[in-house]
Length: 230
Length: 240
Image (cartoon, rainbow over all chains, first blue to last red; front, top):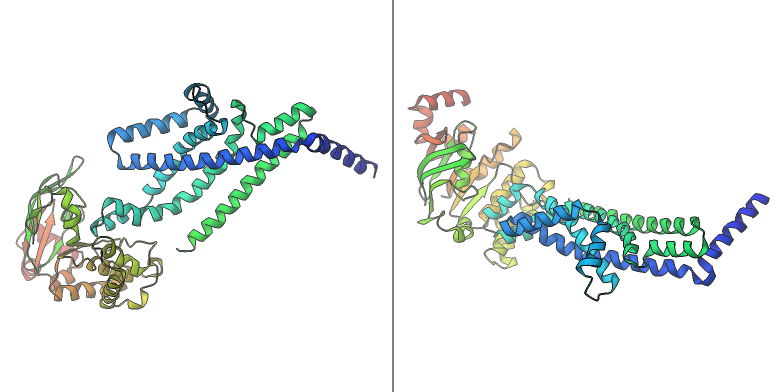
C-alpha cells in the first residue's frame, strides 16, 4: 500500500510541476501545433518539388535531368540539420521570413528529394507494355502518362509516400536548431525550468508515437481501399 | 498500305534487322514466321514505331514515319496493335479499356464510344464481361478484349505480336477464331505467330524471317508445301 501511494504522489507531483504549474503544458501544445504545421507545409512543398523532379528525371531532357540528379544527390548526401541551418543562417539569412516558413521550406526541399525518388520508382515500376499499349492506340505521351501510367503508379507510390511523411514528422524535431519552438523544444523548455527530464521527454516521445501511429493507421486504411479495386 | 524499305535495327552493337524490304497491301493477311531471335517481333514493332529504326524507312499510306515524328500519334491511330502479354489497363474495366482511346484521341462522345465498345465486345463474344476488371478474365478473354480495344480505333492495319504465345493451350483456339473472322472481313493484318496451321489457313502471304532478314516469302501453300531454301525447310521440319 505504502509503495503505491508513494508512487502516486511522486508521479502526480512530477506531472503537476511539469505540466500544470504555470500552464507549462502550453509549451507542448504550442510546440505540437508548430510541429504539425511544419509537417503539413513541408509535405506539400515536398510533393510539388518531388513531382517536378521526378518528371524531369523520367523525361530525361539533359539540363533538367542533370539538375534533378544533383539536387537529389546533394540532399540525400547531407544531414537534414545541416540543410536546415544552411538555409536559415545563410541562404535566407537576409530575408525576413517567419521561422516556421523557413523551416517548412527547408524540410520541404529535403523531403522533395526523397519524394521524387519514390514517385520516379513508382512510375518506372509500371510495366513497359502499358506505355506501349497506350501509345499504340494513338494516345500522346502526356495522355498515356495521365490516364494509364500515373493511376497505376499511385498504388506503388502511396505506401512509400506515407512512410516519408511519418519520417518528416519526426525530422521536424530538429527545428530547435533555428530556435523554433516545436514539440521537442517544448519538452526541453519544461525540462530547463523544472530540472526534471523524465516526465516531459517521455511525454514528448509518447505524443510523437501517437501521431505517427495514427498516420500509419490512416494510411493502411487508405491502402486497403485502393487495393480493393484489383 | 505499308511499305518497308531497307529497314535496319540495332540494339547496341547487335544488329537485329539487317535490311528488311516488304510491302503490305490493303486487305492482305501476312503471317511472319521464323525461329526465336530472328527479328520477327522487332520487325512488327517497327511498323508502328514502338521501335525506332536505326536506318531505313517505314511508309504508311504514303507518309514516311521516320520523317514525321510529330505525326506519329496520328499515324499510329491507323495501326492497331495486339501484344503477346495483352497489356490491358488493369485499373480500368473492360469497357473503359476499349473506350479510352476513342474518347481521348478521337474525341468521340461517351455514349457513342460505349455503344461501339459493346458492339465490338459482341463480336469477340464478351458482352457480359463489359463491367469486369481484366484481373477477372482468363488469358483468352483478355486477348479478345485487347483485340476489341485495338479495333475501336478503326485501324486500317492490325499488327499481332505472337497473340497466342502467352495463352494456355485450350484458349488458343478462341483467340485464333476472332483473328480469323477479322481476316474474313477483309482487315489488313500482319501476324507474327508460331501457330503454323493457323498461318497456313489464314494468310495470303507468309514471310519466313531468319537472321534479321526475310529469308523467303510466298503463298502459304508454297512456303509450307514446297519451301525453296534449306533454312526454311529445316525450320519447318522442326515445328510442323
